[in-house]
Length: 68
Image 1 (cartoon, helix red, strand yellow):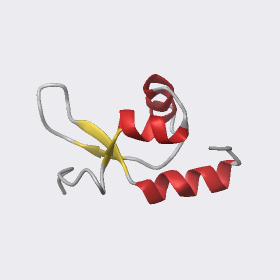
Image 2 (cartoon, one colour; image 1 turned 90 degrees about the vertical axis):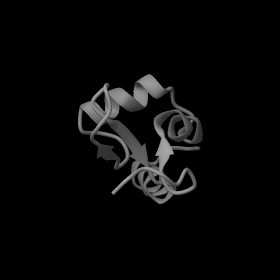
Image 3 (cartoon, one colour; image 1 turned 90 degrees about the horizontal axis):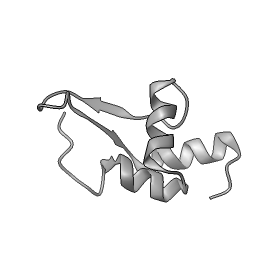
């Protein structure tokens, strides 16, 4: 699986903007095992990347009671 389609796989910055959070907050949530579902992709010099799907973000908003 590769994060190639920006309409399907959102970078952390775009997901954070959608949730009205800072990217750092979203990163901390992912590190702590909280927050919306995400997919980690390996590779690259920096150890890979994390991507989100819009439907995962929407599900998180619905289950957490966040007001977007």
